[in-house]
Length: 272
Image (cartoon, rainbow, N blue to C red; front, top):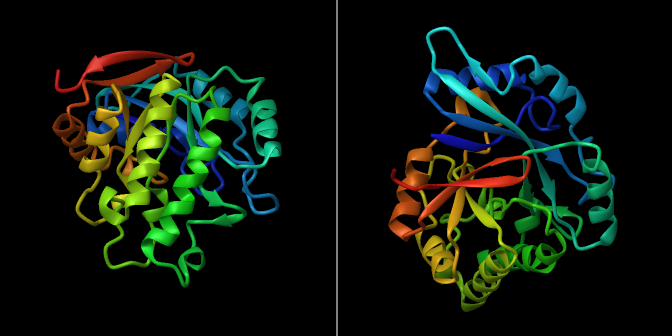
């Protein structure tokens, strides 16, 4: 049980102290987590303030990289960030400048906005079919990804589906031929860059899981590793449905998952 996408009160959309997330992980027997608070410059005038990574480090330093709650198991933790992609160069410049003073273990690169419109909100989907909503999101990933070579993994490729209003929100290859084409191009780019992708359970919410077709395509494109991610913004969500994420990776034939330290991956055989 490894959870490499956990938010704390240092993210503008969460209010949980890091110690509470660690306690939840300890209670649930999770072996390792990574704190990935938001550093977003993708939507000028609308973003939360970027995470105070220095203050977070000061709070966590006393634990020496591991934590154990009485009655729980020992959980290792790493310090990372989730950054947002955007097509305008100022986003990349501000992100690099903000991260430069910090020695992080891991960085997730994600898309949260298309243009200057946050896909989290229902208004983004108004008047659009599912393909019309999802395709520009994937186009943004594909356009930005080559410029963000410093990331560790591509984050939630299905975030646009999380609060979509469609009866079937699931991100699938058969939504349209264009959707499949974009995913093939995205995965080939990820592999060429030497990066991985995360299997993020948050978009499923209470729905049945999805993503096996996507992960099989990732494997066909040469993808070899993933990280597992709850995207937890509250303690009850730490480690949520990661067993299903592991099952999907195994079914897709993906051989490895990774953990990171000082931006260097260590690979482990899935299922071992």
